[in-house]
Image (cartoon, rainbow, N blue to C red; front, top):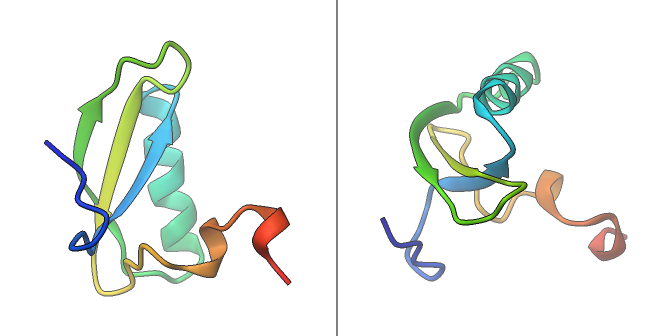
Length: 73
């Protein structure tokens, strides 16, 4: 599955293992977001071994919550 940064509307996040992406989904739901895990893609990275793909009414690939602290004002 290829990521298309211009047309992609889902959120993609890397994780080290299965437990991490379930924790991520739980954290989104606790924040009141309507986001669900829809796919998992294995990577070649030895540390961040999977990419988690989330979709839902609150999925936003440009969300402030994902910007590095250096980019936040």
